[in-house]
Length: 271
Image (cartoon, rainbow, N blue to C red):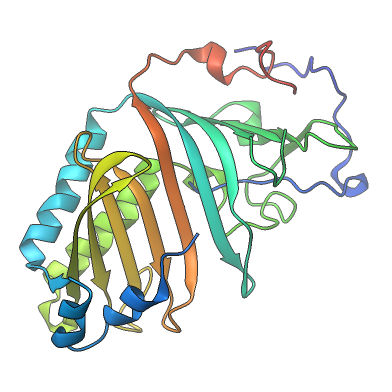
């Protein structure tokens, strides 16, 4: 990778830019009735065809996700992201994502929101700053600290938390916490099998107590039965407000990405 600033656009002082840039974490809401049913009596659960799941069965599925991700060296996908930021649920964003371990990520916005925007971050490169441009006027390339206010605008997570691996890490952490603390009475709902982005998937839901150190109050996780990796994850807070909704469509595992895929001078990119 060429680490010199030989881009098509000069870098500008950040203070002079009002760019809607993003630094993503690495997932629209489902119908509200089953969501509320998740915290209701078993009779109402049955009305929606849902059942409480055996905790060990759910944890085993989550731990299989960890093992499946250990076999991943790189991947590509269409990434769907919707987050609640400062109390407001923002519109869905759609991106192309390329990711390679240990941590290199390229994002290109392909939906209506921020269309044409690109971000690139490689751990240890560019002084650990992300490189980005908005894809619209003033379309200049900048380097930003991932945690800077400009990079974090409209985001719950910075780009160093982007991707499937971080999602699995957060989910697995809460699963182990619930396993070590049975007094927390974490409950699990079995949503059964469905198709997510055309892929046969198993969906489960965890309901966590408030003020017990869990990432969220409710988490619905759908896992591709073929790859055993998550293809949609949704998180709700204690007001039952959707706060995060992440999806991965057309996930291609281990396609053989190279340094060229994470080089700002790649002719397919517009940095």
